[in-house]
Image (cartoon, rainbow, N blue to C red; front, side, top):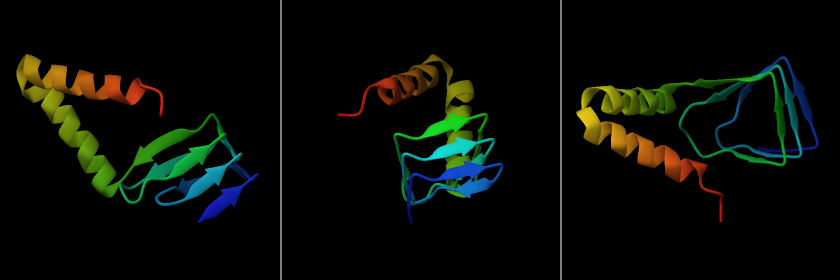
Amino acid sequence: MEHADKTFTESRQLVDGNRYTNCKFDRCAIVYGGGPIPHLIDCTLDNCSWHFEDAAERTLAFLHHLYHGTGEGGREMIESTFEMVRQPVK
């Protein structure tokens, strides 16, 4: 679903597969379930919280176990993954 120039306030937003352009999220629970990647373009998030469900939640649990359960090699792999995330989009 496409959203443009909207304000979402104190709501639960399921973002899977949605596209948001120039939207404002204020005190929202932003929920990603691991489905199609959402696109947030020129949006602002004020006092929001992220929630991960289903496949997204399982992915984070897997990364957590790799980081804490596989020694230095697992930690290095997770750190390099986060470094990749920090790189600007090309």
